[in-house]
Length: 443
Image 1 (cartoon, rainbow, N blue to C red):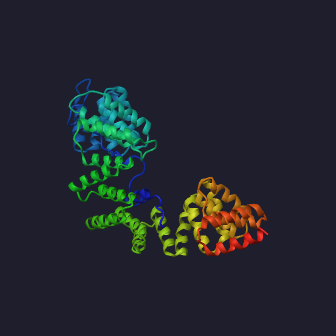
Image 2: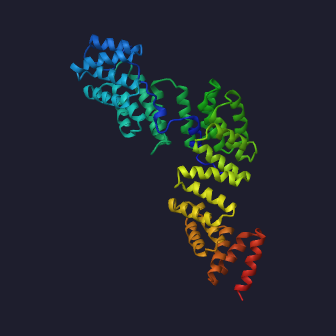
Image 3: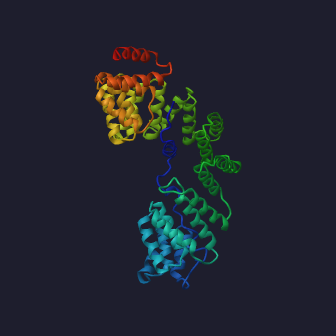
């Protein structure tokens, strides 16, 4: 049965989703003082600053920057001008310059909600979570003018995205509470509903999550995030037939959506439907450099019996990430199927070196070593595996034959008996062998 390798990564990779927090915090500052008076303003702005803000309102960054630079050369602590200059740098995707200017604006006027919020959002985009949190929390504690509720709501929403469990040290409860704070002071948006659905799913509240996704889709049937989210939820619940029906309907509306296509391929593979393979091959052709797609195709090819084709893909993946234990295990399993047992031993052994808690790697090493008459290696691998996973009929048989090969008679007898009990009438060839060896060993 297909193992679901890093499905979230697969969908993110093929849809071009940015890594880290950047996708959650677009580089647009809150409503600018060119159209609204800032929450806190120590003095009336100069004509030069007002002219710069007029240029900002027209996205005339060059004019705005020229005026602001001239003004700041003589008024280096003007908080409003510093914020404006940071805004201009931010809008032109110059994060380092924007950060420095926002920090100067905060230092010049610690009560500026706009500066704290813009700095917090920028730091979040740069994955500087600790400092981003400090600035965003400061925004929620400040008081100001007409813009204050909107600015606070945006800060709470940003905190919710930082706190959600997809991030390091995330906390579903904290993220949910952040979102609720935002909703106390501003109306719910479709993005709020989607985040609520994501948080509910992470808390295993599947019914709540499904209701939220369907609420979004009732208003916007083409919502890519809601379609992908609901499909992902159905897959997690292993409702593959329903997921297939839903995904086919969604793809009729957006036939070239790579995330939905990947999800359908996953569902079809889970259902052991032959259609999964050509769909994945098509996806791989469209995204040949996407490792997650290549990985999924390699696994489906192996399931379909094209071991050589599968292993060519694994070899390509290992060339890029030679220490990936799961890839090494998959490669080793293919080598076993191809009868290349000595190479399989090397692959499994390398996997255990990079991930000593990978039970599949130890299982593979035990089996491959047995096939090349290395019983001591088999026993060592079985011993390590036993720390991670329960014994099975197969492992008992490997224990027995390895002990037998090393002439450890009592241990071999005990292991053969364990195998016979665990086999429960299955594995007829091995049962015959075990019973024959027991008769000889017990004489």
